[in-house]
Amino acid sequence: MLIRTLIAASLLLLLWILLSGHLGILLLSLGIASGLLVAWLIHRLALQNPDFSTLYFSLNLPRFLPWFFLEVVRSNLDVSWRILHPKLPISPNTSTVSTSKLNNVATTAYANCITLTPGTYTLNVDDQTIEVHSLTQETAEKLQQGKMKERISVLQGRLNTS
Amino acid sequence: MFVVSWILLVLGSVFCLIGTLGLMRLPDFYSRVHAASIIDSLGAILILLGLITQSQDPLVIIKLILILLFMMLTGPTAVHALAHTAVLREKNRASDQDPEQPHEP
Amino acid sequence: MFTTAFIAILVVMFVLLLRVALGPTIFDRILAINTFGTAIVLLIALFGFLTARPDFLDIALLYALINFISTIAVLKLFRNDSLGKPIDE
Image (tube, rainbow over all chains, first blue to last red):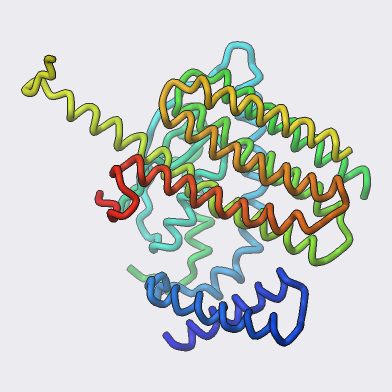
């Protein structure tokens, strides 16, 4: 756990340097101090999840993001078309999708991705299911096919076995 | 590069305007959230990408990417909290109006 | 060309304020204010480029974070009438 806290502190220090752009001694020491402080606060909050590999997640992210970006663009165009249509062809409805085989972080990522694509957003997250509100019947059916869930379950890696 | 940036900025503005149009046109709260999420996702992404392609300073690009990252992480969480609270409120309303406890003045 | 986007964002903000004034339920108003915050972040970033002063990006970055916290705080206050109590499901 100490190693994770130190890694978090050094990443925060890197963020500090990237944001400030100065390398003076005073600013660097302030950066180290605040990095350690925030890492300690994260440790106290117990936000770190021991059975989740952040490294694996980050390494697989480049394969996921382009597909997800295309998905966002596609759903944006769909919702925009429906808003601009004079007859407003919408049929709002709620449905549930299962999140079995996804761990906590992957479930959070899945819920966030659902909300980020217009046309669908999450109303409620349980242990096994996510309640989704969708603008049309078609988007709900598309979500039920579970393509996004497959991609995210690849993202979480092989550490999860439950 | 200039043309690409210009196209991205104009497209982002157009999507923002479509989102607000939807915010005014759509009939109820739950569908208005979809319109607001157009502004939060593609409107913000395209305008920030337009600014990224415009700038040469790496520090500026890093800051713009961080703004984009934070918005993509916090936006959905805020929308989810909002919708979740709305649903809870509706349920509470429904249970408050039990026929056993009439609220006659 | 930044001016085009700037004016578009200003129009967006005006309409969002209209939604805040009209909004039938309190959630419509909170939604509009949350989106208003996004528009402000974009506006500040555009303003930084418009006046060629990239320092404004720091303000935009901070505003993006504070906007999220304020939305969550308002919702928490609204849900259990207090900011101090933990959220109970």
